[in-house]
Image (cartoon, rainbow, N blue to C red):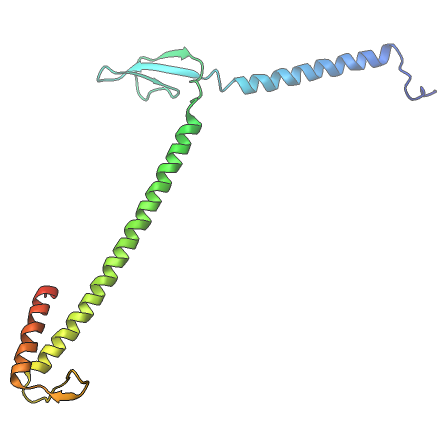
Length: 171
């Protein structure tokens, strides 16, 4: 038995093999195409429900309902899908920004409320000190010297502090 040299082809055998391979390849390709097309040619069911509405579905209806099978092409692809997705993403981003802004405002309002609560506490403590006659209170004069507050200065300070507390401290 001799082997043909590389590059030389015998007439009968290679063409028969080629035909067999081509036929096999054709059938494999046909099977793949048939499987790929099968979902696209899915059956659509049409029926009328108890309320008289006509319903189309890819699933048969439950129960004993008169059904008509329709071989319909698949619905067309949405040409605006990319634009819709982009607008949904933009809306989501906008919501995130609004939420972050609202959280920032809420944090700022909470900090301001805490500060005001602290100021009101200090002012109420000062009011208690001013109302007590047992404590000697000192105040700095124009020259920076400490002088004892007399009753008139205490009364004036209590009035001013009381007005500030009434205006700024609700509880």
